Image (cartoon, rainbow, N blue to C red; front, side, top):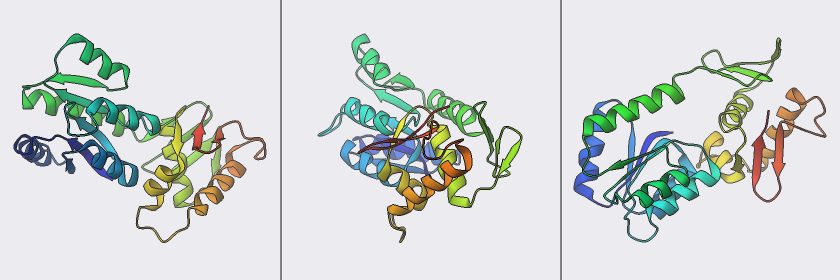
Length: 221
């Protein structure tokens, strides 16, 4: 998975930003159009999106809204639109931060490092019902160890990290099995069934891994 997607139609600015971010050890993918960035995000995912507002075609606010429909990936809007209404709009749509252009690159890098430290450095995911240790790749229901295969663990981790949010089936499949996987999409349905059998008190009437018909799945505590 790419660390950071940068959506910026000023190529010179984007190239410079990529150079600074890459120098800090993060991987980047740059797009000049929102539509292309969303297509990549749906297939490959990312840990952070840095997003300009004034883009050709779909604007940054629309991109922000689309990302939020399927994931809680952190979003930083970086824009020359500095009016209060623009900032409020971006934050209401789900952006985690809104930075005015021109900006200090050191400040942006500090914000990026802060997001990664808060969101991704923790190896334990716990919600009072389940506890996952990402470094040991173990899962517990209360004090009971749950035996999960690799894909089951990755799938449960993705669902728990997005607790309360409905995730699109295609996005889940692409993130867990990969866009170029030879597996069939039905594989996701099978793994959801296996997970329910292992974590739900009644797998036929699940209360934690829920199906959102026509869309995908949602994890609830």
